[in-house]
Amino acid sequence: MTEDWTTAEEINAKALRQRFPAIDWATFWNQPAEKDWIIPSVLPAGGQIVIYSPAKMGKSLLALEICAALATGRTVLGHVPKRAYRVTYVDYENDPDDIHARLADMGYGPGDDLSNLEILPYAALMNLDTPAGGQTFLDRMKLHGPEIVVIDTMSRVNQGRENDNDTYNDFYKYTGLGLKRACIALIRLDHSGKDESKGQRGGSAKNSDVDAVWRLSESSPGRTFRLTCEMSRHQVPDKVLTIHRESMPLCHRLAMPDHRTGDAMEARIDAIIDVLDAAGLPDDVGRRIADRTLRDAGSGARPATVTAALRRRQMRLETSGTHPQPELSGTRREHVEP
Image 1: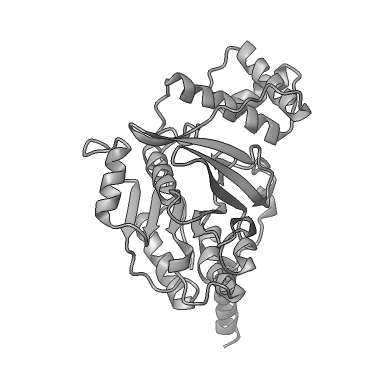
Image 2: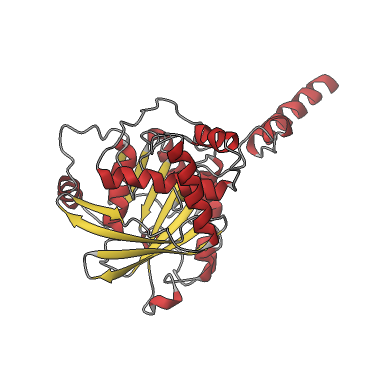
């Protein structure tokens, strides 16, 4: 009887450890301290961000372009992805005809492999601020195994009132936390209130459980926009991004920043760019080679500064129109542990 009881305790302990895993100190320090970016400055791997704006400004359009580009390995916001990503776009706003027209305007067609991109139009999922709804959502995500999820928009997915902070605390408890545990990045699209200067519409808890909040605003009607990082838990190399919307094909191009200023941070970025250029490294050089080159040259710098320099060199690919072919990875992560 004692042996059976001990075995039951061991089984229960193993189940609890799997459900509530602790940091493994044996491997913890082997992980890079530098943040891994899917889109530099904007979307960290496994992170959760908000992009909000007034209605009809085009945040869904921007999000769809981001999703399609990451799923196919195309340049997005001045960045050439390291590889193609698996993406799920949960769309409560647009019907399949709208999606078809927008993707066609972006230059996609039958010849493009969009198998990494899963779009759920008018998704009839349960409320994501409830235990049953969150679990159903996480179970559905397992079918595609995404590394990035987009929810368009947050006002459509919860049963609680938008002005009630408990609504967003419950969303994180039942849905957001499950995505974070599975290292799945989340982009939440949302609306601003009547007074844009006061941020997103609804309760203040909307900002409490995300890694960054980005506001999309219009500089020139229908042509030039600005993405401004209003809050972040991590260091963001570029907190203001100027974006030009072009029509043939439909896309958003990041304006090349004027970084030759007298600012000390910009001077350090310039110095790193000069070292990498002098070494003859291509604009899409990887982080490991860049770090080794800088060490060999005695030009050590903070990780965020090196990230900003690499990002600006990659933007020259966008300007020149010459892009390397991304590597497609067949490696999948473990996803969504209930």
